[in-house]
Amino acid sequence: MNQSEQKCVIIIDNALPLGLIANTAAILGTTLGATLPQMVGWDVCDASGNTHRGINTVPTTVLQAGEELLKTLRARLYEPEFADLLAVDFSDIAQRIHIYDDYVKEAEGTPTDAFQYFGLALYGDKKKVNRLTGMLPLLRA
View 1 (cartoon, one colour):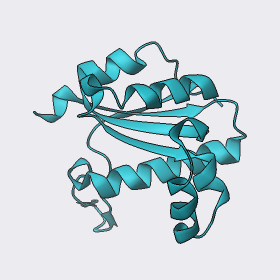
View 2 (cartoon, one colour):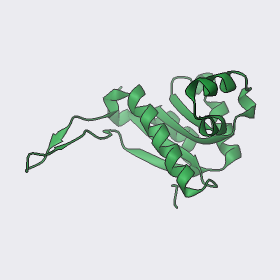
View 3 (cartoon, one colour):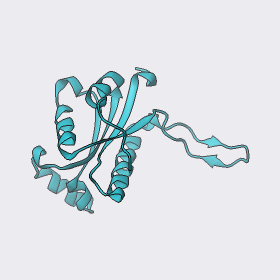
């Protein structure tokens, strides 16, 4: 599937304070870049000879949703119809625990329905991503 048939969105809980919104977006973007290195373009040299690192080659839209809608969207991503979409989530557990091994232990002991999602990132077939997120507004601070 070519890139024009792919879509990437980041959905963030609009009730979060601005700093946590920025943190959530940064963490989701970092994980997307590590998981999908093909989304990052090559480095560019400007006319002065200075290098600028490659940036995302797939347009990414940042949308907003409330806590319950994020939880509903995350649950839908476990359905067979959407199983082929790449999903990255950032939750209250991940945000409050600062040692990764402790996060892993806490997450492994927490049922899915107990997670509070601060944000989700989705990547995959444009039609499927639109089916899940087409009704969501852009995130505005």
